[in-house]
Amino acid sequence: MSNRYSDNASGSSGDWSDYPGNRRRTNHDTGRSNYGGTRSSNNQKGNPIGNWIQNRARDIRTRARNRQRDQVGGAVGTEAKAIRNQQLNAKDFKYPEEGFITPVEHSLLYAMIEFPENYPEAVIRNEIEDEDFSQYLYVKEKEIKGGKATTYEVDDSDNDVQVHPNNNESQTAQQSEKEEQRVSYGQLSALLALSAAKNPSTASPEQSSTQEAKPNDQTLSVGETLCRKLLRTITRYADAHSLDRNNEIREFLDPIERRCAIRNEKAALQQLLPAYAGYTVSLLTGNPLPLLIGAAALTGPDPMMEENTNVHGFRGLGSRTGDMETAGLLDEDEFD
Image (cartoon, rainbow, N blue to C red; front, side, top):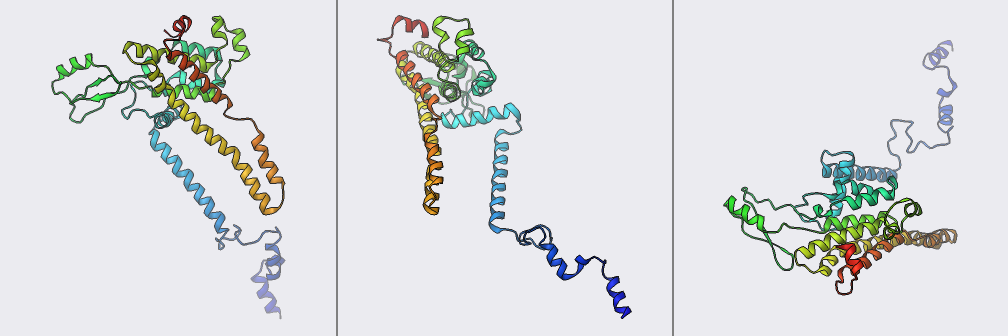
């Protein structure tokens, strides 16, 4: 009898929780099931659906970070942000494959327009007036294998026509001086579209009361000021090369309107999704509360109202600038 007692004593710590019945009660003290828990290293099942969703989301985030890091190379910070904006604008506004000599996304003005909350309107407007936007027109020359230069000529429709490369470097240099360099309005369209999305359609009260400027300029918003300056750049280029103003302005503004239409569709879909989801849940549960909550999203303010107002105003300025026959002398003084 004593030997049996000593054997139990040597193989047990003396704690009542070591007995099978007490261990079973201890495992459930927390109220949690062992299924899927992490308390035992032998149980690795967990919730298979939840684990799959978490792993899938983790893989998607990892691939997105790797893809973004590959696109921007070794750039970080503001430089990586500028490269990312350049890639997005190249897709939305159909940048030439060769790229531009001077990327607008790397300029201080682009950062001011993208983050208007960090800069006073007066500072942004002064930067717009001081900026030379003609530098953002010129496209890089195409690179030809073998080091042969490629020259271009501009026809009446302002379409670039590639001619055969010339092996004679001196003759190529003489011809390239006479020929016009390729241009594109893609960067100017991207800059004005960004202003339409980021800047309000009217000038702030502080702007109109504190800035010392001409009376006609005090009521202009940042978008209107930028649009006037860009239209002035385009009309000067059109007049210098005997191009039709209306065609050039239409080529400049059409991508902005297309992008605004796409953003309107996305914003409308985001507003409708809660209503559809609430309607579906109400049908399944018989509870009208989800439907009411989803319908409340439809009564909210239009997130695209300011951008639509800006784009509509840009089209009005463009129409007035392009109509040379009906434009008054005051308009000509503003844009010429």
